[in-house]
Image 1 (cartoon, rainbow, N blue to C red):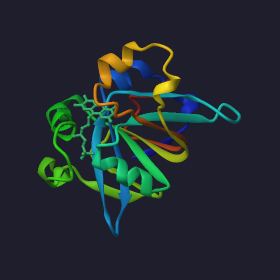
Image 2: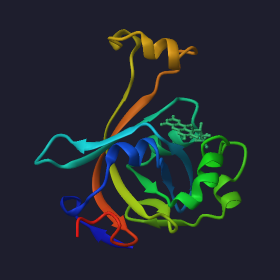
Image 3: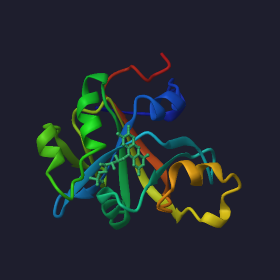
Length: 175
Ligand SMILES: Cc1cc2nc3c(=O)[nH]c(=O)nc-3n(C[C@H](O)[C@H](O)[C@H](O)COP(=O)(O)O)c2cc1C
């Protein structure tokens, strides 16, 4: 994997998060890690000189949330299409009940203050800079509450400062 500069990248952030999905992972070598699939999130800039940031949304029930809450960093991995089956599994089973990472055979790499997967095509190393729970009173449209929160289990959003981007090859470079 080589480090790339976000200014040299070419990709569609909408399809990358929404269609390709990502794995959000957190943990450390001593206590282990957990991962789950996400398809809701944002890549953009916030607070600083166009510093790149990622926003992710985790429901309170996710076991991965405990790891993200406890660690200073999390990673976002973009996987090849060939991992769709594994990503569907990682997005339906819980690490609370089974060793999801061992079952899929993907390889955790503990580095850069966090953990990511050796098989990833692209990795965003994110340092948490904000976390906040969505509040029912703050919804301007009631539609998401009706459609997505019958249990009132609102997501916590995390803003991560993207400190490093690792790429397997030149796929995401504007060359
Ligand atoms: C395609 C897909 C996208 C998902 N996106 C999110 C998401 O953005 N936020 C979230 O909290 N859960 C999302 N999930 C659900 C979690 O991945 C799922 O509940 C997972 O089993 C949690 O695992 P854990 O308990 O080991 O953390 C998604 C699941 C799938 C299959």
